[in-house]
Length: 237
Image (cartoon, rainbow, N blue to C red):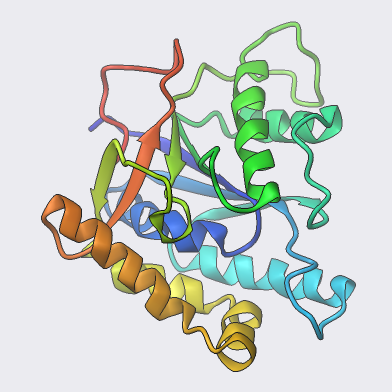
């Protein structure tokens, strides 16, 4: 595997932890650099906490989670349910992040995910990754980025996804769960209100994907099969 800088672009704070934090932790163990971007700020993710207060809470939680693997954490700070793939200003915000980060590989949501915001982010990333490579497409970041391979994360519970890639996270599952627990505004609410232990949910999904590929725990991905994003190098750890 070549040296890589990976950029994981999720919708809400905690989406990355749910779907690919074990992979990011493994990248870090191998000495690669990582950055995490949240397009939305998660301000609608609670019934009792008001959006402005929750926005600040979730920003702090995201920073604390990223710190566990020394990852840079960035946000586009768009409100929940305000993410639209056809909105040029939102696409350009993602273009600027890609141009600034200059990643070797991007990880983002699967196009068939269950939530409209997630699906919109997947399309925004696909469009922005192309636009970021066009020299005469002007945004606030002047320097262009190279065409970047994209890998789509698993959907929640793996519904509707036939993986093309697996990453063995048996050695980083504990870090993944520790990162997830930093999002206490979500974890506590689901345990107390929805009676869902989301850590157990995520662990079960990782075990299921591990059973598919012969390891204890795994995260699953599908590669974006679009020219010229396909390259001969191995990018997942």
